[in-house]
Length: 277
Image (cartoon, rainbow, N blue to C red; front, side):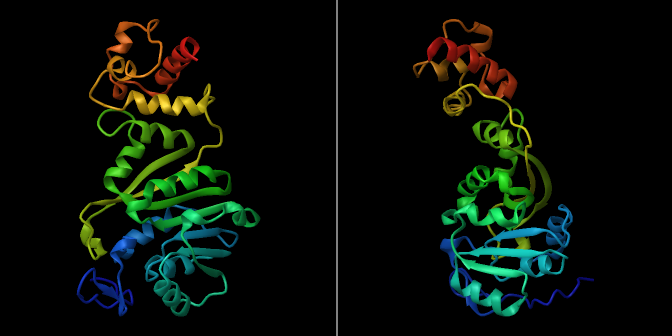
């Protein structure tokens, strides 16, 4: 028997649909979760207590917000780009621990987070801006404790991949800065309106110590080039650029980037950079 969560079944409307009488905006990627067990998994994955600072990106109609406020947190900051949902959540869930900002998270100066750091993020991310948000989190990871985000299944698999299909620049880059763990996979019918793709809860935590990388900015450019055409060998990919690969063994150059782990790529970069730069 399904628990009554206080939500009536959403009614179909012209265009993208509506919730609580408010039209949904397709340009904001609004697909609202409707399964409480998924929310419970998100909240149970992080240690919330009466000193926790939590922030949410894109609250929508407050399905996640309501459950966060039922935990003993100290504060909840919400960043929502749609004024209709800012007004709705503010009116529906009045709570002196909550502050709702009508702002795009990508435009937010994270200096404001310093006073109440570290922060826990719980969010169903707008899928079309997932990677810009991940980069924003990377740039401000010193202010973060941990979090759980909802992303496309394909994106989640790329982020956690360690070899083979999907493994590449995205995997290496974000694994350098964060620890990741796959949580629940979510089918489209858990949302209204349903997206066209499967989704995944993804736990993350900033790495306390980062690997040392020689000339890091150019290293990440090098990694992109190693995977620029994933099915091609390192030799075929790298010889398109200015790198001196004359001292690299043919056995290594015959490999694809997907066949090398981070330590092997770091060693290759050290050898190539000494010859090239």
